[in-house]
Image 1 (cartoon, rainbow over the protein chains, first blue to last red):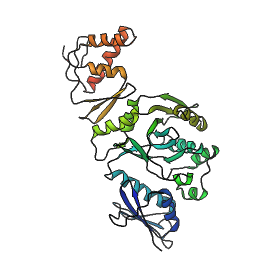
Image 2: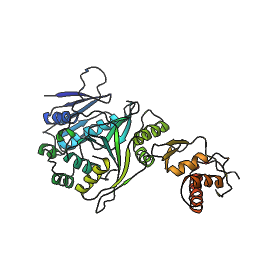
Image 3: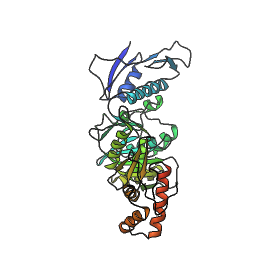
Image 4: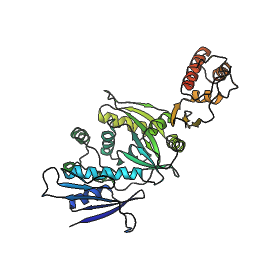
Length: 276
Length: 95
C-alpha cells in the first residue's frame, strides 16, 4: 500500500510517498503540525520505497527532487537522506526568511539560540537542556522572520551518536527505543509538538574546544551577529539586509561565548547565564 | 598605510556602520560582503574618521570619554586605524 502525506514547511510544499508505515510515522512525527491540507499546487515529491527483494544494502530506494534515484541499506539512513534533502530544499526555497544555523531551546524567558560549527556540541547541549524540561525545537536550523524579528526552529532529526545518547541519559533524558533503533530522533520523541515563533533572548556561541570546567563569557552583540552571519542563508535578501536583520536579532539578546565542559555543569552555566 | 598622529583618516562611504544596543557595532563592507565586529570605542573612533579629525583629535576625544591614560589611547587608536586601513575600510589617509 502506498501512503502519501503532504507538508507545508515554511511555504515549501513537500509530498512524501512511501510503501512503509514506519517511514510514514517517522516523518509525521518530525513534521507535527506541518500537514498540508491543500491538495493542489506543486508536488515536490520525496519517495521512499522499501524493496525487501532487493540485494542487501539497496533495500530502501529514494527519489527526491534534484538528485538521481539511489538507495540506502537501512530505514534510518534512508529517512535521514529524505529529511536532509527536504531541509536543504526548505533552506533554498524563496520564503522570505533568513536561515540561521543553530539549536533553539524554549525557556519561560524566551528562546535560547545555540550556534556553532559542526562538532561544537549543539546537539548534546540542547538535548541536555531538554532533559531539564525545556522544549527543544531543533538542533540545527531555524528561520528568522525579518518582519517580526521572531525565530522559528525547523524540526530536524537529531544526530545522536552513542556517546551523546549515554551522556544525555545520565542527565535523565530517556529517548524512545524505536527512535534510537532507527537513528531518527525528533523533537516529537522528546514530547515537543509544533512550537510558535519566539524572540531570541540569549545567543550562545559554542566553541569546539572542550575544557575541564565550562566557561561562559559575555560576548558583544556585534561579535554574535558576525559569528551568526557566517552561517546565515539570506535567500532573496541582500548582504546588507542580512547584516541589519541578524544584528537586530542579536541586538535584543544577551550574547555569550561558551566553552563546554562536563555536561551537567555546562547546562547549569548556560541556564545561569540565560537567567533561567 | 603609515598612520601617524597627524593623519586624518576618512571612512569609506560605502561601508555601513551598524551600531548595536550594547555599544558594539558592525562595519559591513559591501565590496567584500564582510561584516567586521568592533567594540564601542572602535565605533566611536570610526564615527570620527571623517577626514577632518586628525588622530590627535580623535585621541583627545577618547581621552575625555574614557578614563585611560593618553599613551594607551593613542597606541590603541593607531593600531585600530592601521587595522581598518589594512581591511580597506578607510580611504587614503590625508595629512
